[in-house]
Image (tube, rainbow, N blue to C red; front, top):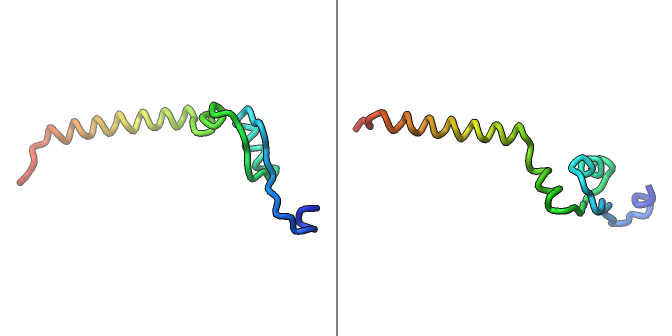
Length: 75
């Protein structure tokens, strides 16, 4: 409220975040900037379901490419 009242150009910094959940909480609390170890950032970019989906997609792509090579090209 003070920031709005005096029209300060201030950004809220969440510092030394150690867990991805804390990043979300800091953002919901209004933080615009966060500092964290690289490993915490890496965890934000990774999720088991994403990894599983990517693995399945790549397997399907390889299967599609193999099947495509078996079909003679029509010229």
